[in-house]
Length: 117
Image 1 (spheres, one colour):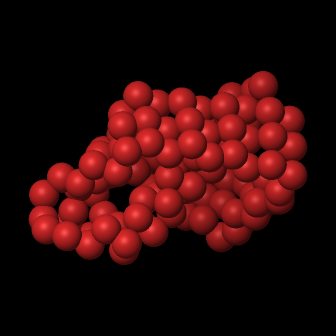
Image 2 (image 1 turned 90 degrees about the vertical axis):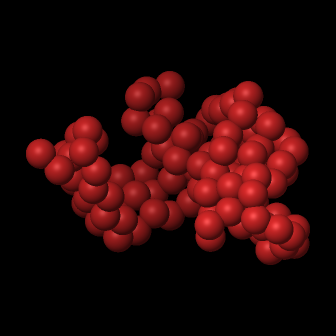
């Protein structure tokens, strides 16, 4: 699997984790401080994901423009032993994330990444 496809899989994992975390945050409510969410085991199979009109700028990133490109991911996995995410002034600690992506196509169009240099 190429580097670009790995970054795509990692991006999907991060987006999924934040989405699941946000849903858990709404359900959990509660006081301020660190909230332990537990583990997330998720898989994405036989799907098509579209990323359109994304502009990302930060120091240290490469400068890259994509008009339109489709990537096919036969199988990829991402595992972490711990992640801390801040959402709406609350800190959530996920003990582990295990994401499997199989038979997924990702279409990226009108994407701009700027390294801020």
